[in-house]
Length: 354
Image (cartoon, rainbow, N blue to C red; front, top):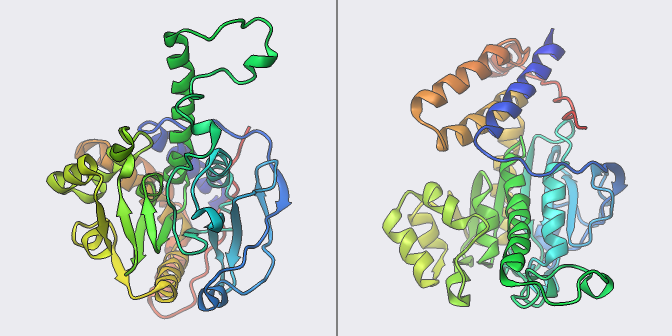
């Protein structure tokens, strides 16, 4: 009965959440590979992450991640630590890293992990889009890949055809970050140093944001002659709820510091340095991982659904969800834990895929 309830719950959660958000394309090639581990410049932070331990085998995409690492927390294997690992480029997001971000969150094994901690290696969380990547050049965006090898294309495509081509890349970039939002389990962002442009697009899709005192933020796209197009303009106003200040930041492209981010509600807390940031982020992850995974997944789903729907629609959604979720054994285990006993929760089933 419990297994059946879990399957029904995941079906309802998948259906209800995707009524409000278009799902990313499924990665049909899923295998078991080993992710590399990256060292951290801060020995204190490295110790928190388990030094030079190798990560476990994880079910992810069909190719090895080049610019991300995935490992379980040494202190709690139910916590997945995903690290943006391009420190020499200040974790600038090139096309390959962008694809990897979408892949890792789409294919995360929820039977292994109950919460994700997202961080950046080196001195930056992320300096945003890597404009040195030819894929992101305004000259090449909209060009057809492999033109020089396609004998049927003799001339440069006209403007309309280039527009239709370039739109798909923008949608793919949006989809990669939306995969964070669609990830069934919560994602906690631990932000230190600069978090610029695409970095803000990225963390706007997470569930909880914490930062260190040295964090600097900027919706920088307007300074580059662009309107931000992968999530900030859509998510930040709903994350913060401070319309005037959000518009000012997006229209001016000015920097804002950690205290300002806290004042407007973009981050939950500001920590003194990177080590205390990681300690607090892991503490939050530990608390979430100690709760019923059925309840946590249902809560995230309901919060996202409610954001994009009326109160009445949100109430209907959670009623449908809990009609199935009430059949879980986790309610008894949670009651035992609340009375000082040892509440143990069975792992979720792996998400079924085509």
